[in-house]
Image (cartoon, rainbow, N blue to C red; front, side):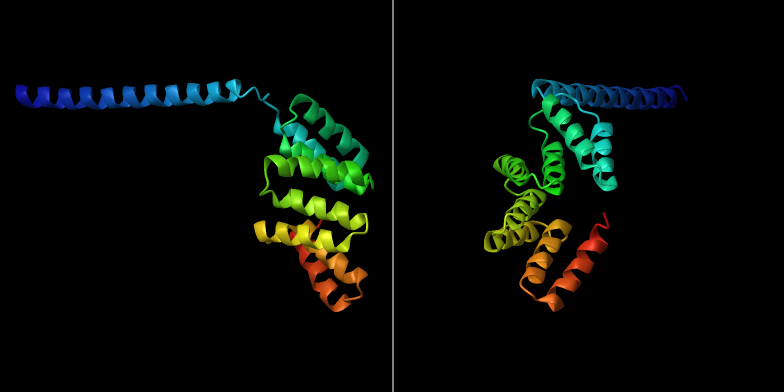
Length: 180
């Protein structure tokens, strides 16, 4: 019996050691991840501000959305989500050059951003360049086939070129993907 107890105690001691090691490893990984965020110099921006900007966009308050996204970019110029939101708000206000510029800046950092390509295409289309806008919309859809802004953009080109039979299904699909 004494031998059994010692084996039992050894197992529980071994299990405790494993749990302690796992806890220390988890703690170290947490500290390491925090150090990476701090070392990157990127300020920690709450999602609440992004949510407020997105809510303003959904409500159609594009000036408020612009203000919120500009404030976010003032805190962190590398915040691509805020830059895309700002580009969309500017596009809706028909401030096309700034909308184009902000989408293009995102593409410099993230050339695979489907949303940025769609915003770029929308700004180009609003300026009247159908051919180049179609290229951007197609690039966007190649990256994300469900990018509603690109689908709607292609539908608008079809509409402007009097291809209503092609435009309507695209507009319905875009609206079903993103009703806002």
